[in-house]
Structures are given as C-alpha cells and as structure tokens.
Amino acid sequence: MLMSTVTLLRERGARGTSIDAVLAHSGAPRGSVYHHFPGGRAELVTTAVQQAGDFISSVFDAVSESGDIRGGLELFAQFWKQALIDSDFTAGCPVVALTVDGHDDVPDAVETVAGIFARWHDASVRLLEQHGYEPARAQRLATLTVAAIEGAVVLCQARRSADPLDEVLVELLAILD
Image 1 (tube, helix red, strand yellow):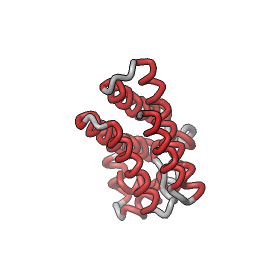
Image 2 (cartoon, rainbow, N blue to C red):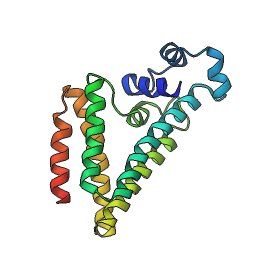
Image 3 (cartoon, rainbow, N blue to C red):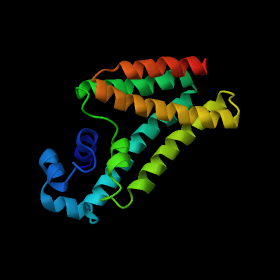
Image 4 (cartoon, rainbow, N blue to C red):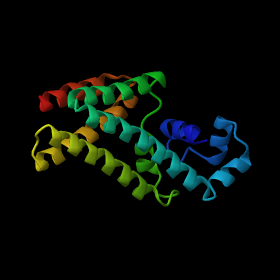
C-alpha cells in the first residue's frame, strides 16, 4: 500500500491519491488500510511520503559516507532522470506533490514535508562542509542544490524531457568545481 501510495502521489498528486485509488493500485483489501493506518488516508499519505523521503535521505547518507560530492550529485540526478524516463515523465517527486496540494486534507503535510526537505538540506550542508565550504556558503549551496534538482524534476515533467535535469546538473557541477 505504501509503494502504491508513493506511485499515485508521484503521478496524481495528493488530491488524486484516494484510499480507493490506493486499494485498486495495490490490490490490498479495504480493511488492511484501517488496520495498518488507523488514521486513515492522512496517515497513509504521510507515512508513504516519509518513506520516500527516507529513501532519498539514504542516498544522501551513502554520498556522505563515500565523500564523493560530485558523484553523489550525478547519482541523485541520474536517479530522478531514470524515474522520469521510466514513467514517461508522468511521475515526479511525492514530497513535492504533498507540498503543493496536501495542505487542506492532510493535517501533518506541512510538518512532514518541511522535515523531509530539512533532512535533505542538512545532509547537503554536511557534505559541502566536509569538502571545505564555509558554513554560510554550504547553507546557500545546499538550498540551491535541493531547489534546483526538485525544480528541474518539475520542468522535466512539463517538457516531457530530461533536458532540464541535465542542464541543472551541468551548472551545479560547475559551481562545485
């Protein structure tokens, strides 16, 4: 159910991700939603987005452990590029989906997405500081990186092309060089 919820969020946004849609996509019986997610749809959506956020955080953690900031950025961009291509540019970031249209019907949406973006930002700051960037510059570059990649994903969907992600990657790497 969580994977189906993430998929539907990526493709339809938060408003388009109903319990009925999740059940149809996952094939799970109706009772399992309320058994595993007694808070209903809101709990299911926030748990799924948290899981997706954790996955991306694990990519940041792997990059931090390797110390390869350039390779990490390329890996992150390649992950999104492949996800976009595999979905024929219909599936974007579930965290962005909840950010954009989850506020009205998912009470914890703002807190959930803010926490996820903060983790991604903080992981980027740590990695940049490990590479000698002073703290204030690392903060700004981390903001730029997360915003640029997430924005590029949206542009890729709009253009139905991976070009925006490729262009953003080239410029981010140039800044880091």
